[in-house]
Image (cartoon, rainbow, N blue to C red):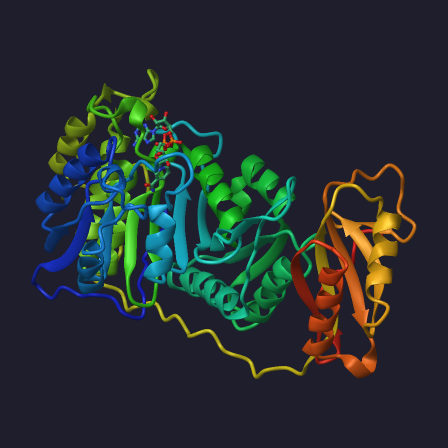
Amino acid sequence: MTTQAIETTEPIRGVGQAVPITIAHGDGIGPEIMAACLRVLDAAGARLAPETIEIGAQVYRQGVTAGIEPSAWDSLRRTKVFFKAPITTPRGGGYKSLNVTVRKSLGLFANVRPCAALSPFVETHYPNMDVVIVRENEEDLYAGIEHRQTDEVYQCLKLVSRPGTERIIRFAFEYARANDRRKVSCFVKDNIMKLTDGLFREVFAEVAADYPDIEHDHWIIDIGTARLAANPEQFDVIVTSNLYGDIISDVAAEISGSVGLGASANIGEHCAMFEAIHGSAPDIAGRGIANPSGLLLAGVQMLVHVGQAEIATRVHNAWLKTIEDGIHTADIHRADSSSARAGTDAFADAVIARLGQSPTKLTAVDYGSGTEPMAIPPATRRPAQDKQLVGIDVFVHQRDDSADALAARLQAASTDVPASLLMITNRGVKVWPNGMPETFETDHWRCRFEIDESHRDSSTVVALLGSLAANGIDFVKTEHLYEFDGEPAFSLGQGQ
Ligand code: NAD
């Protein structure tokens, strides 16, 4: 196992004194595993001064839709370090995901999930697996901007920024360098999403050139995930966008042994949050059998972050020794490889009893004596480019007309406007001109107009929309079509 040191540009360092941290006990198994972890950290000599905040079910029940009391932010801003047990997210609309809110509000742009095998002590098909997933945490489909636009069509906006992309990719390479990792792999779907995922791949290639000492490669997310599931040993550090990272990090954790072992660090320039990757496991809550390992390993990452690397090493090695000695919680217990089935508290006691010991078969970790903070170069802002309006996509809600009839109505409604209808697509597929009869058509039509060269400004857009509205066209959304420095900045219709 490789040492996983995570530092940011602004760590909080405890020089012999207790470091203030904010903790939340969470829901379900949260209070059980948090209590066990705090006992281990305390016994190991961690110098921490926890402040407790309320989050999760209890707060949601009080009608706070974000799941966190406004006053809790004061503690988080003051301590800048959040050690968080899992919570239960209520089902149904009206509630916001607390995790997403905390990550985005505190600018925790990088999610780091190490997934390493513990073979032969924890069953896995991949005994040499040692992968770290670095997931972008703030952008992509998790921007949470969704709309229903017609009777039949809903949309979710996928927002990807160049600075946000550059920052996460640089973080992945800096992480690789700081942790003696040899390779960074990029996973995206740029063959389909040529602008958004294409940007991610383009920036990856640019940033990789600054790290000639680290290998890099690129995978389309579908085949990359298949290879990760079938042959994870070929990967080292993987950097990817938010949704893909969410999915593949669970895949990676599961095939390394158990999701119950996975830890996650959410790192920002100012604050950091450490948690297990699993949820509140309501099915086993209150039974004292939950595995505290994911949260404990998150605690190890936190200790490194706050400058208590020696304690982190002590805890991690005692934990490895416990696993190696076959003392396992029910989720990873196997008759042939375990010597004892321990409950949450007994497992914590076993780790405490091994503080000061190191594993003899698994590789011991060494976080050093408080490594230098990992530098995160700020993302560069490029100069603005020449932006030229060339057209507009008008999205129309209608269910009665055919594509040909809709085109005729749009053309009739825009005769006095210096813009011409170029094409109509339905769910991205061209249906006019020359659509195919087999194409399924819903009630949501993207109607692309090109604006005449001498009238390329927003007054033409306003005139076009005014004319469409006057003619009873129900438009539900528009997207401007631009060229940046003469390059088209929009995708073509499928079949165009
Ligand atoms: P889960 O991760 O809570 O549980 C999935 C399965 O894994 C269950 O069978 C559970 O018993 C088992 N499991 C999980 N952690 C374990 C542990 N430490 N030891 C032993 N077994 C463990 O996922 P879920 O059931 O889909 O979600 C339950 C709740 O948790 C939901 O409300 C969900 O929204 C929430 N959730 C919270 C977080 C978080 O707070 N970070 C993350 C994921 C899910």
